[in-house]
Length: 262
Ligand code: FBP
Image (cartoon, rainbow, N blue to C red; front, side):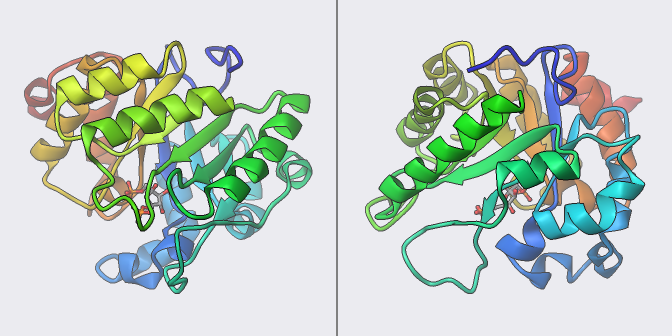
């Protein structure tokens, strides 16, 4: 773990990472209700909001669209990914090198590790190469720490999420991105298992403003340092309104009720 409080992807110790790698991970289905968001520029525009500390995308989107936003958006380049067309045991192909991520202008790196998958060994070895190379460029590493595979039927159980944060700490991540384990107490334990490493919650499928903000409030109360969120922001008709409220809950530690009132 490196000290990352001075990194551009951290603001006052917290992060709000806007993720838009869904075209690869889930496919066009995530854009059915918001077809205009198929144009990545629309989401880069959203990422210019002050609350957003980085935008997480795959190489192709970064190459094509980041040059127009490099003055206003911090880039988190996801180095691996899998399509939903893959039917095998969870795995994620490394599709971008750290050297190339740095050349494109990345401020941070992202890497998925599916602990518990039959491919865990290779994924951890690939993570090692990326993490160590990233250190040469001082690029913080965000691990999408998602235990899953044939032996793991429930990937959001409290014990699984605590293992996910610990695994990220042990392997040298700087931020662990994990799913919500269902309660504030369970999240607090997952944060404790991460030692001094930052932990952010993965957004998940779209819910109501109040439900989402209440979960974020619980996560911040639990000691997590923010969010890496996609659908709950850009699938909304007015992402800016939610980002205004998220800014209050994450950075000003306001309640969901108070943030929504303003
Ligand atoms: P969401 O907030 O939309 O869940 O996005 C976060 C994220 O990690 C994305 O980066 C990724 O595409 C997606 O979730 C993967 O989710 P899953 O593997 O659970 O389908």
